Length: 132
Image (cartoon, rainbow, N blue to C red):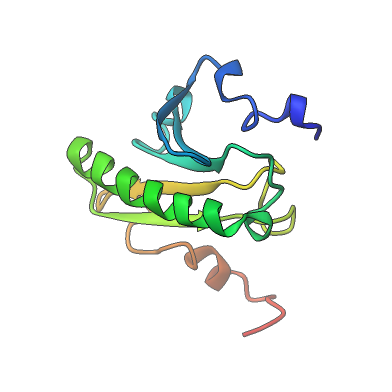
């Protein structure tokens, strides 16, 4: 994907995508169409086109952490959630569909179907794993 076509290099190109807050190198965004599926979910993305988390600079990692704490405070003021799933998908095999680093910040609720399962739940369901 070329940077001109990358939705995270052009945050204002998608009218549903809203920058909630940002710092020098990163932005915390939410997309209105995703709110009906995962209420309050959002992403932290670097402003520079970085393919994955391993491509981030030390400054981008520090700024990501700063926005993660701000996102937590922001979400706790707005949602009655009970926990979080936070994570990076890296590479196609790792579940990354857009080749621009992005950290998922997903509030979780005790009354949802997968409550208490965490992100490892799906890994444990697959008995054909290569490694125990």
